[in-house]
Image: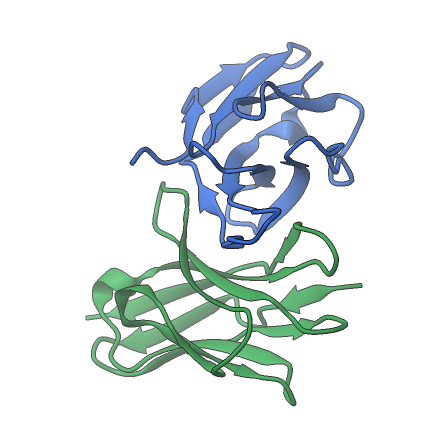
Length: 113
Length: 118
């Protein structure tokens, strides 16, 4: 069965430092991978996706993610964190053969001033 | 353009009562999804609709939960005989799935309905 894992419940990083939020997946076939962000008391917002093509995908707010097929990972990265990046981040994968999506449990990112 | 809207934003109900939650997707989006998010938790898939196909109800936790989508647009999630464990934020999302191409895959979420069962 398709699945996605976010191994860290929380990530703390100092403002200005690079950040990484981890995601690994288990799917058969080619994965369709997504990152979403949820700011406090708001719905989820789409950040970026990998469908095919270049392994490094760029998204909103300066975020990027690298698709690594051998490590079955799709980690979210940003070169320089902002306090305003503090939020809950979700990784998701498309369930093969459907338009249903499986979400990870979320990682809370806290950027410290 | 308008995003996904949900109503009400907050709902407090007594245990045993029925509730209806409404979702208005982005115009032209063919797929509509309902999720449940308990406090500080991840997203739990409930149901999705795609065009005129039969909905995928595989995530509905019990037969007290049902949903319909009228005219390929607005959707209503109904919870009958609510229980305290139903308390959560219910999120709706829509996406564009083009049968002849143009599928974007990413989902656009509404702000959610916070349901509290007392």
